Length: 250
Image (tube, rainbow, N blue to C red):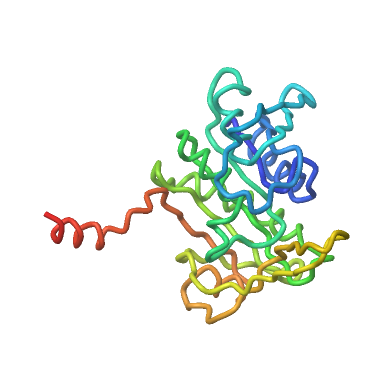
């Protein structure tokens, strides 16, 4: 099985090394094509107003000076010769991608681009409670077997699979829960400062999750220490409103 791996934390990120080991447990035909630098929060963005450069590290490892979407687009259309990959893995992201995070996430976006281009795609993210101690061993212990099970079951062509791994005690067995994407409000951490010329500027910090976590959703399940599996559909059309407007605007 030919596998493409990418991410949004950059080709040298610790979580990406974890993903490469996970991929190698599944296949010996791995292509590593990822952003040169961190692209967290890039979403499903393309680089349109400057040329893209690719740094060839070796035959199957390349760094793209663009977004996660750029990396996957170039990988599948230009950089991988011969047969198209049969699986695309994105991550492992430092931090969970749940609830409204999925709209910002470059990790999700890389898997989204793979899906659009016809390759079954999975995003992987590792939740953590202590920012200085991300428990990478949890995703590494559980992801390979879970990915094999997902491949055996299969999923539709317009769907990507979003996996989030909890911060639990090492060695503890982790339950797997298939759940909906959550939805709850974020409290933006905005810091205003003054530059040396007296003009204000702003830093957008990490999001703090606020509000009620709805039972049965990824955001509630990850707090209970389970691995969440959420299928995300690329068709964003809201069917009830589509039907209502269709009737109303005839």
